[in-house]
Image: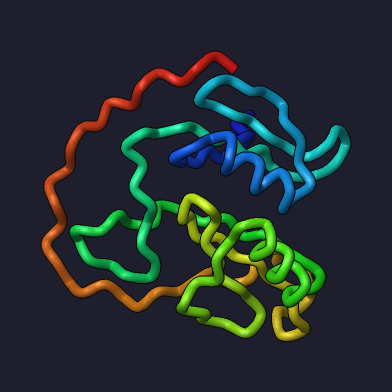
Length: 164
């Protein structure tokens, strides 16, 4: 068995502090580390949850969802956030600065866009999902992309991360 553990999901943004503030209010998280262009947040001590980090990226381009055109920034990932009351939490997320996405693929999921344009899902477990063993409802399912020839792979050098 591997000793590796997922500890943090990192999202680029126009303004790391603004986006961190949104998710702190949405999830009840607190700041764990704060630098000029980097913010790490996580659940309060003893509470479950995965840490989120935000990095200011001056050239940040919001993803387009569910559009799958080559020339548009593709969604790389999205966050699934389980809630008890889908309508109430959707309203709270919108009040905090999220936007409801135009395409809503399922009744038990709400796809929203955070203030930087990242798609995320609020979802509730429904009796149709079975025994409750699954902690994840199906996420957004955009239309299938048209068949195309894959682009050549490019080597990408990531800038160094600030010390944490």
